[in-house]
Length: 272
Image 1 (tube, rainbow, N blue to C red):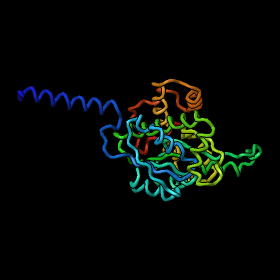
Image 2: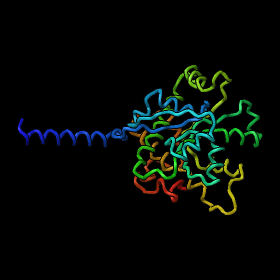
Image 3: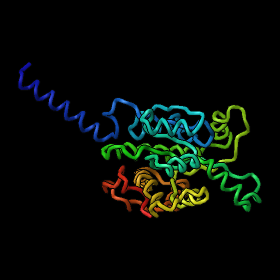
Image 4: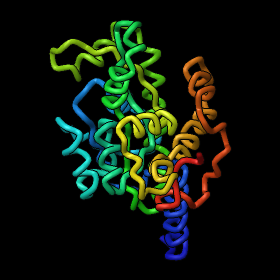
């Protein structure tokens, strides 16, 4: 073969690979993203996203890592043993208040009271809210990985959609796998990190200390990530589940520039 012609073929092949890698986020990354999760039905979005290929749809390779308690999972997240994690919101907010450099990017399942009158019991409701699941990443992730984190959140939104659209028996079967024979709790799932809900839990736990800046919590809730991830869903068909998510989102589609540069810095966080 003519050497010059061979060089042209090689160059074309390399260019094609680069284009493909750009088109599919995370394709070039060989190391899978390690996603920790609490072994609890509230973490079901992580399991559903893996089982239904939603991580792959976002161009991600994800390795699930199970934890039996949130404290161990958050410690692993801080030390870099995992890259992201789905853990108890009460434990996560307490660790953030104590100086752990973690950022909330998405929500999960939150226990709900089976008795309608229980909603009137504020103490009981706060206890349920604290047991809900949020998804976090370390604050020091490089800005270059923003697309990966958006993809992770988008996959969880897809999982929420799948879970909502499953027939009731299939949904119960999914949650039963994480219940280990115990009664399946009543759960409400929402991938939105919802700064205002976080704030209510934060205040209920008494975590806003006098020396803290007023926007301390806002700098630890990345609603921008969720907005960008939700924006991606506009590329596909719209349905009642997505309509519901868009109607409840703090940010409307395209309100947060994809390259704002505010992510993964102490100045980043909620736009509140």
